[in-house]
Length: 192
Image (cartoon, rainbow, N blue to C red; front, side, top):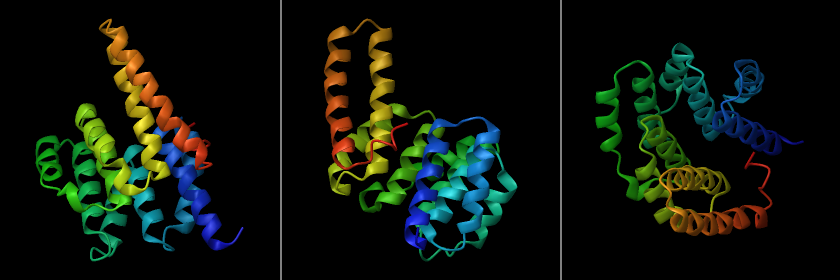
């Protein structure tokens, strides 16, 4: 694999690890992989920081945020800071900072982080509404599609829980369409 393929491979493994939140041992394997590549490319660095936050390695996450060039990814770093604040127990301040993010001009990477941060704050409905509305703007980005599938799963479970069978079936059909888009792009392995 060349450098770009290796980066894509590490990013995909990191994304899956973060999304599935496997056991710490499983996560540590990916973390070791990622840290070897952290200096290469900004989006891999951002994934690594998010990953560190999700496994509560706050000190290392904070250090990498400080070491990242702010001019390249200001929105992304702001969003990561909100996730860090939540983990440090500064939930209210973090939530206020997250609310100040302008979602209109976020690139795909920043949008992925924004959705992830909303989930950290248990804002699943808001995450779903924003992502389902804006997904086409990002040319059906594989990582965002994968997140949308999971958010559909959350809504389906909720609908079934409240015996809204018709709504659940409607959501399942919509989810199937999103899954098909993922398969067509050859990215069904992301949806693990």
